[in-house]
Amino acid sequence: MRIAVNGVNYHVEAVGAGRPLLLLHGFTGSVRTWDRFVPDWSRTWRTVAVDLIGHGETDAPEDPERYTMEHTVRDLVGILDALEIADATVLGYSMGGRTALSLAMIWPERVSGLILESTSPGLETPEQREARIRQDEALADRIMREGLERFVEYWENLPLFAGLKRLSPELQQHIRFQRLRNRPLGLANSLRGMGTGRQPSWWASLASLPMPVLLVAGEQDAKFMEIAERMVSAIPHAEFVPVPNAGHTVHVEQAELFDTIVKEFLSGIPL
Image (cartoon, rainbow, N blue to C red; front, top):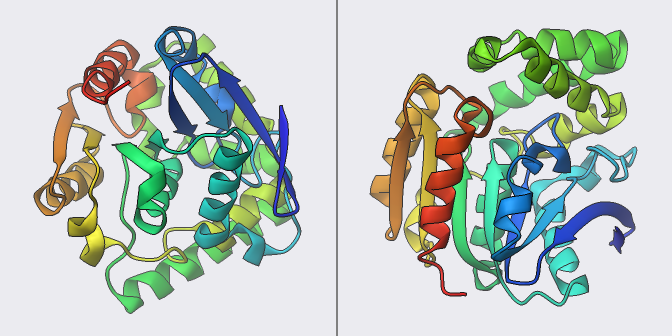
């Protein structure tokens, strides 16, 4: 379905009739990220998968300022309002996890539970944020200059996604096809507007989260393992599940185990 929020048309897929579970994909992803899980999860939960701004079938505005994290979480609240959802458990992967965490920070009354896969609360110092902004700006320029196909080839060969190389050629091609369905402008502006350097840093505010939080990271993803270990010590009602034989994309590399972990956490959220 299409939901118009604050001048942007969002692509949203809502399935099921139980308690709401909002699903937020990562950078270069879309609602298709969750196809492996939605048929099962929607038997108990009302899954609401959203193409984030600039991704999938959602609009890709020309102004990068429209993509800021503050604008994006306001849009998500508008989507919940349009679907008459008072609060939801939110599951986010990577960029989607940063978005889910930002939603919980800014609108905690709309988030009943939080599942963060391979997620960062942002960068702690102004120097780190400025360096990342410059890096993301250069990457955005590269996308616009070289085109989507060359960027996807570069992106899928980053060390961060080394675990995907162990997947079957068919599944690797499926993921590549999903990424190639995005638009250069949308991806470039996503980096410029809601990249890790541009978003608020939530490190100092993690102790204020009132809802139960599940942190998931792959044991082969050293950077996000360290981040998750720091986060779980700062969040009052948090648990951390490290996943063996997985890197950054736990939901793909260890799909069955990820499914089990998520459903166990959801079983503790009142229906």
